[in-house]
Image: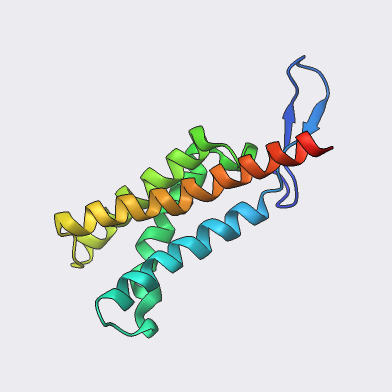
Length: 139
């Protein structure tokens, strides 16, 4: 696995490596956003934030699986395959772990978790891409 600082990819000509997006901000953002999803959900049901870790852990495991499956460290900013794989793994693995541990997986929760995590995990990647394009145009 490459350094947490920066990943390297082969450029279009197939020659020397070029720098890609730094990995750690994307790892941190994914973790923070999954925890935020859990905290918002708990709050919306009048539950205390003290149990946020218990709600978030299955989804965090799912996000880690998504990072591994997509090898997201190679292109952490990409929507596909990185972002989409991380999002789907977050929800699918998270729900499977919740079911296996006796936690709720009502269909409405699955729908809300799918949409909320898509907005969070794909949304910030889209905004980062947009910001990068705007920055390139200005330079």
